[in-house]
Length: 481
Image (tube, rainbow, N blue to C red; front, side, top):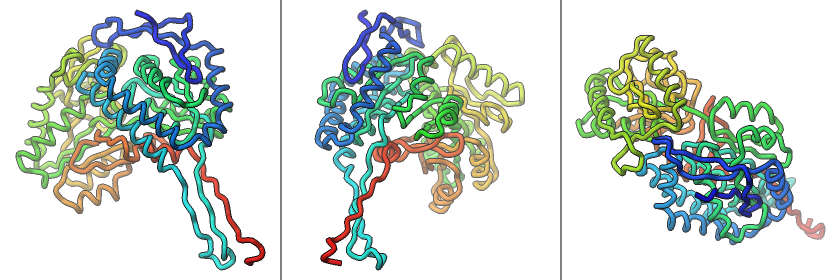
């Protein structure tokens, strides 16, 4: 099995340092890749720095054409890439296919934003002293971006770093997760087919030990990081002068109200919550972790939810029927197992699941979880959901807001007033009505508040994060004053 190259300034490079990627499910060899040396990393950063001005002024047509090409080629290679994602990540093939489809859309929207990235004309004569003057307001890339992506969406979260950077003319040096670098390297193959100038992008599957030097490099004034809050805050605190965008963790809650009470409605909500609390083996920062059910329907809904969780198909991620596959490694699975055991020792009840075999944690539903237990207060990042009865919507809102996280929350209700109250009250980046908090359209402004991060993703909103405003005031000729 030939090792996959990495990409320095858009060119494929091989090194003598060869690493293996094995399946989280059965430990079979998925592929090999080579790791860049310090000299390779220096060449990538230097090239990004050198091309900064040319990248800022690159035509919208060139940027958009490159992004359209990537979108089209991802679609053409979708089956192959989905199988690679599933193999290296352990993600069931059904979710891997959905991830490729999302990446296709993310690059297509990036191309559309490249064409729309224009600026505005602002009249200034609203002030009498500025009569005859106007302003041209445009945004320009701050400079080269260091993108650091996680293992759980090894293609689409890479797309959310790369597509907006190319769209706005920011060179990008991408460091994919060492656990799942192969999908990003396939993206490199496709990017290398475009006419983007040398230096506008590099993909470096570097070891985590190389990250601090990249983070500290002054030639990379923007850092876009998705991952754990511990690492994210280390980056932020170490680089206060840089623009740091952080997409961190969450412990998303779904609120179910009694006006959402027909049998069909409750059954549908239970199915969605069960699935999206456990898909990706719970390794999504907006997967459902807490369910807050009004006491009037708590017994009925909890029984429904328990049955739905117990019925989720687990096992081989290559099986198209599998909904819940393995966790990324045994260490992660053992941590989740320990957290569930701690909750049970503190009084929680296991309604279904709660067991582990190797890297596989059975989809788990807990009740009576103490508010300060890790399974309630922290981000489990595993297939564990905690259900709790609440007497009213105000209590549910207060419990959502009591969390130090603030990424997504949802409320199932037939009441427009309740939906609008949720938008007004919940201290989160996204409120989802009548759907799971794990819903994400890749075009929307995605991000959190509190310990869930700083900044927003989604191509248009990420472009705003990667750019600064520059204004030109146009005054009339003195002969006209």
